[in-house]
Length: 287
Image (tube, rainbow, N blue to C red; front, side):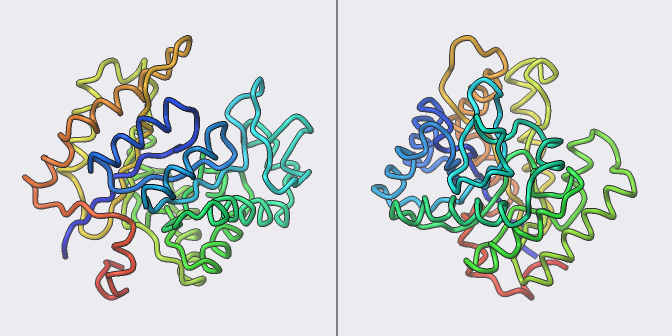
C-alpha cells in the first residue's frame, strides 16, 4: 500500500500575515492544500485569492473564537453559538449553550461563503477540535452530515497515532473508544477520512527553537503509515506583540525551505492534495 502525504496550511484568511504566507507557499508548490477560516478578518481576501489563482481550498469549520477581546462573528447569525459580542471562546460555553441545529446552520453558512466567492471546496476540517466530541457534544454528527451533503472528505484520523502524539503518551482507553465511535459515525455517513494526521501540538516555549520543530516534522515524514496522512501547519509572516506567533513563523520557514518535500521524495512518500480521495477507490485505502 502506498504512503500518501497531504501538506496543508491551515487558517488561510486568519489575518494578512497568514494569507500572504500561505499564498506564497501555494504558488511556489511548497504545500498541496489550504483551508479557509471563513469567520476570520482576512477571509474575504483569502477566498478571492484562491478563486483568482484556481486554488482548491478546504473549509476550516470554525464555531468558536480564539480571543475574547477580538471575537469572530457567526456567519449564520446563530444565537446559541455567541455571547452577543461574537462566537464563544473555548469549549465549555459551546458545550453548555450550542444547539445542534445552529451548528449545522453555521457549517452551511461557512460553505456558502466560499462557494459564493467562486472557490472550489475540496475538503472540510475543523478549528480547535470543536466538532470532534471532546467537549462532550456530538457535533461530529453535524460535521459528517455536512460533508456527506457536499461530497467532501473530512479531517479525522482512523488510526490512533495522532492522539498519542498530541498527548505525548499512549491515549487512554476512553479517548480511544471515542475515536472509534467518531470513525464509525463517519463510515455510516459514507464520508472519506484520513488514515493518520500530524501536527505539532506544543507551544513555542516547549518546542524551544526552529531546529526542534523541523526535526519533529521530518521525523513525522519518516513515520508516515500506509494510506493517506495529512500534515497541517499554520505558516505566517511575523506579527508584533505576540510571542506565541513565533511558532507560525517557524512553520513558514520550514515549509518555505522545501525540506519536507525533499524528505518525502527520499522516503518514497507520495505528496498529494485532497484530490487523492477522488482518485482512490475505497478498497485502495486501509481499513
